[in-house]
Length: 189
Image (cartoon, rainbow, N blue to C red; front, side, top):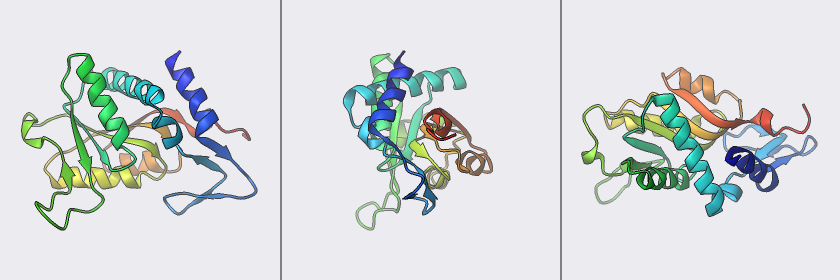
């Protein structure tokens, strides 16, 4: 029921389709399909639903909750925070890790923020994103986590646009799980 409600909200608030005037995506590609998931995810009710669904998918896929969730700022931020709060409500501890696109050029020069020192040895860290097209943002987060000594093998997102992201992540040994894909929304098939 919650997944249907989230899909309906995305359809109504975040999805546009135009086969005449193509949309330019973050990857630079042109597409007749456009998702602005912030229009749905930044609504607290739908953010909570997305976090519940992603956390349930993680537990089912992994057999447990991860130790940390990491993603590239800004797309992953709301989801990361909502997921850790949802886990906290369930009495579980998941640490948020926010990855910058580039390391700070001042202070400690950190590329990622989080309580990394609290993670257990060989922690289960999963990558989070809202929408995955080519996987570029998620791969940036993956590379940053590898530089820090972590090796994420799983990524979870709300929407997989099915434009190479799954394959690009798999090439790095990362398995992608998504709540929805482009096919769930396309008007012209």
